[in-house]
Image (cartoon, rainbow, N blue to C red):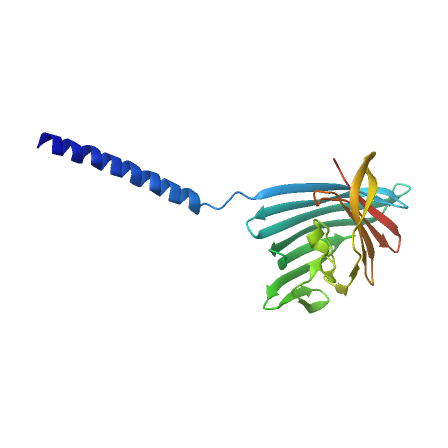
Length: 225
């Protein structure tokens, strides 16, 4: 009888221990995986006015959800006089390859422009001061954070919300100079009605440089090492 009681006692403790361990494992499995974060900071230079500011993309990946948070600070000067000031904060969110959310506020010389967007059915609906635009689900913001950001022929201007049809060239191998060092990269050309872009991605799919043509000259964004 005593032996039987001992077996029951120790068996009960073992069962409790296994139960607690199983509960712990289930709780750990239920916790969401930690988000992977990558920050890309660019020096921005104008072909006429020289250094004009910085541009930062913070990329957070959690499962199938990718969130890009952008901060821009631009100040164009000539002879010490400020000609143009621009500040921006933007958030874009993807589920897989589809844009599902966008919000951006751009302040140019004191004037603020807010752009909001949301996936709805087979479309992406954009609200801006110019009105409401219904874009195809394949639309991508004009913000190069990965090669995936240019796998569409429809792009949205991140400052105004305007939607444009673009052509994206096949990437070709080249070498560019980043902070004095030669860097192997793949170059893409994005051609649209308002602006033309060149983007260089390294072998890790990091945009190490991109360049925008506008009415005042070329603006080059170079990744800081």
